[in-house]
Image 1 (cartoon, one colour):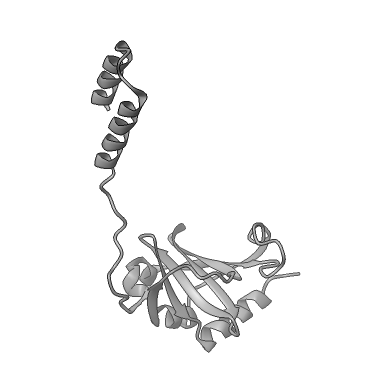
Image 2 (image 1 turned 60 degrees about the vertical axis):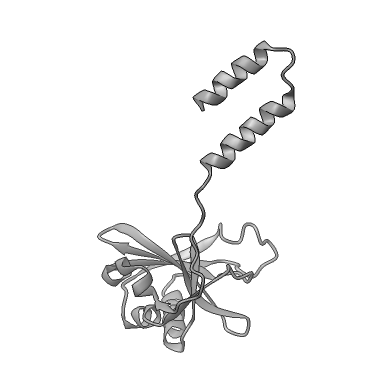
Length: 169
């Protein structure tokens, strides 16, 4: 950046310096400084959520969020209004997490809610779900900027339904 500043002082001091040269120098410096790329695996490898994020093995509590109107007309604000219930992770959730998760692009269908996973009062991961099995029936997590999906199994779907029933009206 210092070199860019020195060059701009020199360039501004001469009337013969044209604006295009300054732009070329800025673009060249920008391209040199931005060599980081997002790392994505060349092939999709099947893994369990517990392998993708080992912190999930030790979670001790959950907050399950159910959006009030996930399939309504307002696609931008449907996540603002929700109800939630506290829960303890059990076999239904861990059975789902042990299943195969494949990396994929973010799905266009809407989620119905999310599960905040805690360990000793600190959130370690957020899981997202949809139970509309005729269209979208999944649990997914985001790890290192990548989306990992698994098809929601019937036991997990039943557990989600029973947890939602615990929410007072």
